[in-house]
Length: 240
Image (cartoon, rainbow, N blue to C red; front, side):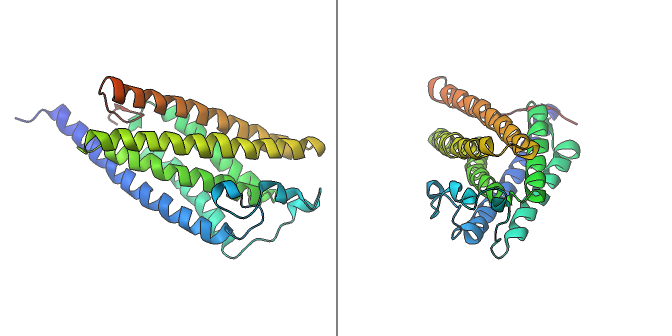
């Protein structure tokens, strides 16, 4: 008779991979849509294959920089991403299997939803759209790696997808995102307000979370390369 525990774990990983496939499709499509909406904007940075600089958001000087022309479909893009993260938070709380990173993901979702909402209400959505885009682009590679890890794919595809994920995250979530935070700090330091400093504080907290996740990814890649141990960055803690 088949081991019930193995059967339950198999169901859990089947559910996880269904989620992985869905999110891979979502992040791919939302990234393509983001390029379509933002590619011609002067604040879409060249580091993300755009034609401008994030500093262009502030060329009009304060308070004029908070009044920006939104391109076609901008609100659909921005609020659609917000709706997805709210839905994902609900699923994290009530649907997904409980994983060891539950508290961290809960904090991440609350921080992300707060930033998107607050930036939209305060007319910083032009800056927010770039931060959303670089995160969504990086998440494509998260779910490629997770799909390989949770299947019987060849070992080299698992390690290769993990290394690719690490490189993309270092570039987008440390280098590009760090540059955006630095540009905001320079501008906000010349124009003090509780709105500016609260946004900067949330972004710095998000940056620290990314540093920790990159450390975990690096640790798992080392385990795969040197001790031949392949597993998802976050494992199931228990069955609900």
